[in-house]
Length: 562
Image (cartoon, rainbow, N blue to C red; front, side, top):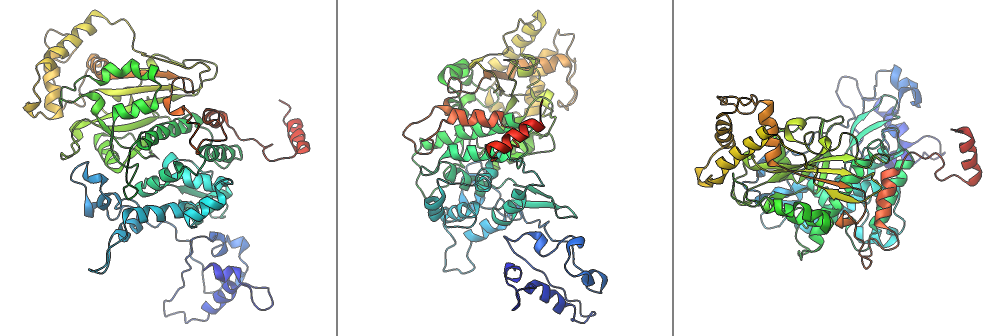
């Protein structure tokens, strides 16, 4: 349809679209025919402008009328139920993986002819990579543009993974929808703002990961372009700490897979790894050692080591609700972690975790989680309300997931703004005699617990609560059958302290985060400092002097004397 806008008539005045609209008016009014214009890269205002900008007032006053633009096309995930994974291992298979997101991906795996195969998985991923660079052949784009990646290209590449908020009034919003796979959720009546979103789409997240980790692509340049977009006001900058934390977590995730020998035909980054593997990649050795022994502890409910729990997240999605255990299991299968709703109490990021086997039928009873609180305090080294903000507040009861956990969970406190780099266990407080007594009672229950009991989560919790109620005045004597809603405050604190494995990390350097160790031989970080790029993003703010000459910069400074 863009040809109708680009090409003019013989006199070079009106566009072909202008004349076609007039021709459509000549159709009989009672035959019920209307025209639909579709395109993927043109601006919506070309075909459906605001009424005050319409070149032909007669269209509005006559019997012909322009419909509002069609943009709410609800086809995401329409094929998911057709191939529901029966085990977590099955969710790694292409037949399940490509069912998520747009129907394009799943349709390419199938063929309308019995004697013709569908696309191979790596071919579909290559197509997704090309879509993320504006529809160009990826190998050609990489050769031509790898040293001059634009801000909009950086946003397109990082967008499927990082959960970036694009300012609706930014010109990038329209460009990302029209040419780089971003979805349009709402168009203002004056066409001046477009609310956009990047849904949780595992195929695009995998494609994004492969571009970010391509040896010929400079990751630092991608991060610096994101920083520039934030300074230009194109990216929402109010939650920079969380944005940096998400990028840091994804960097650690990717680094695990860089050490694995995976055939090029495989889906590389969208597979399960253990909690220990991930934390070894994320943390520096001195930080990892602070929780290493806790990771070796046996989980009573399943009989497995806590560090052998499975996680899978290739990207983040912003949510407007507090997830429950079913939401966490669905996210784990999909390979996505949650960026919590604004003003969410307790946590900023939730990463689902499965303490069980990959080849068993997934159960919500085996779901645990990593709860992450992000701070960007420059003046207060440890952040406000510490250590409560790293322990009591960073618990499932405070977040609203569940009152009583029945398996270990990790609480990670990331104070990125600290000028000093160090880590510590924030739970080093003196416990009361009552708390120590309740802890010993839980030990008594779990010491001889046999996983062959085949308990559900509810029965398992009831065993513990019944034991706690013996000679304990501040615990309910007869726990209700519904163990989710009637826990006492004492029980909530007891379970939190018993099952929580907390770690507080301060600063943003390779002293505490092993994934910031810069491999000098890797071309993706040559020519820049990875740590500095992360810090620039952490402290970036809208800068009206960006791109201006020296005289303009001085004028802006005089306009803002304070």
